[in-house]
Length: 461
Ligand SMILES: [Ca+2]
Ligand SMILES: [Ca+2]
Image (tube, rainbow, N blue to C red):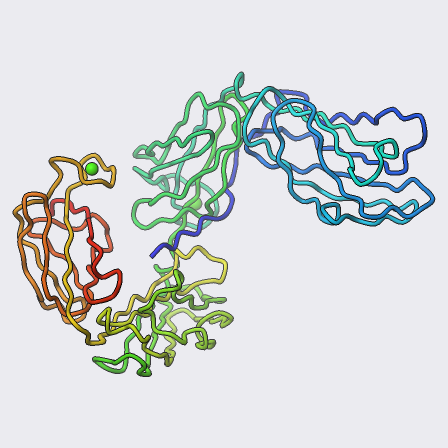
C-alpha cells in the first residue's frame, strides 16, 4: 500500500546572503503614439535560484477611452535560461476585459528549472491587441549562476524530542539518510551526532526527499528544500514522532467467515495513549482504491471517516461499530480487507496509526509461486548468486497462524505451492526474514492477480 504523501517546507536557517545586487529592471518600450494597453512588471530584490519559484508582479492598465476585451498575456523570452510560468488567471484564454482607465494586477509564479545560458530576459505582452497599441513590460531577472557559484550545505537531522522546533544537544538522529535533488539526486548519511555535509553544490534550489529515518521518526514536513546561494550554509532538518506513538487503532469483525454480499460488522477501537488531547482526527480507508477485496460501504461511516472530526482526551478510548458489504469477488481472494488509517485530514499518512484487517471468505484453492533472494547489491533485482536456494519455506495463514503449505526452493530460489486454499499467507523461509519490516504476504486464490509470480527480498535472520 503506497501511502507516501510528501509535503511541507523545511526550516531554512541559512541566511540567504545576496552576493549579487539583484532586482528586476523595468524598461518601458518606446512608442510614438500613446499605447492603449500598458503592461508593467517587477520582481522583488530576493536572490533568484534555479529550481526555486518566485513571484512576478504584473500590472495591466487600459490607457484608452474604450473598453478592451479578450486581453490575453504571454511572455516573449529574448534570451537566457527558460522561465516557466503559471498564474495567468483572467489573462489566460479567453482573456480579460478592462474598462477605460481600469488597472488590474496579477502575480505570476515563475521558475527556471534548467540553467541554459544566463539570466532570463523577456517581455510580457499581449497577442490579443495590435502590437502598436501595447506597451509591453520588459524584465531582466538576475539569477545566481550555478555554473560559476558553488556552496556547501552543513546540516543536522534531529528528532525534536522536546517539541520546541529547534535542534537541541542530543537530538541528532545518527545514521539518518539524507537525499536532496537538484539536477540529480545526491545522498548521504548523517553521522553519529546527526550532522551531514554536501560540499561543492552548484548554487540552486534543492528539494529534500523524504527518507526512512531511524526509530520511526518522520520528517516534520517534507517536500521542502534548501537554497544554496554560495559559501557555507547551515540547515536543520526537523523530525517528529508519528501520531501512532500516541493514537492506537484496532479493529475486529463480527464473524469468523463470510460469503460475498454478506453484511459485515467492523468494530474499531481508538485510544489516545498519550498525555496530550487529540483533535481533528478522522479515518481514511482504502487509500489506494479500486481493489476487489476491500469491504465496501466505508464511505458511509461518517461518524468515523472524513468529514468526521474526532477528539480524544488523554487516555480516552472510543469505539465505533460500522457495517459494510463483502465484495462480490472476495471468495476469489479468500477474504476481504479493511485498510484504514487515522489522523488529521491534511496530516502525513505515514504518521497515522493503521488498521490492516483481513477476514475470511472461503473460496476455491489456487496455485501460488515465486522466488526469494538476498539482494546483496540492493538493486531490487535477483542477480546471479543472490538466490535463496534449497531452503525450506512455508505458508502461514495470517488469520489462524497455522502452517498451510510447505515446500523447498530450487537452486534459483523458486518454489511452487499447488492447491492452496484461497487466502493470505505469510511466506516464511528457514533462516531468513523478509527485508521489509512489515513482512511479506502471499495472496493465494483464483483472483486475476493471484497467479502472478512473486519475487521477494529476504535477509539472514
Ligand atoms: Ca528540540
Ligand atoms: Ca540484486
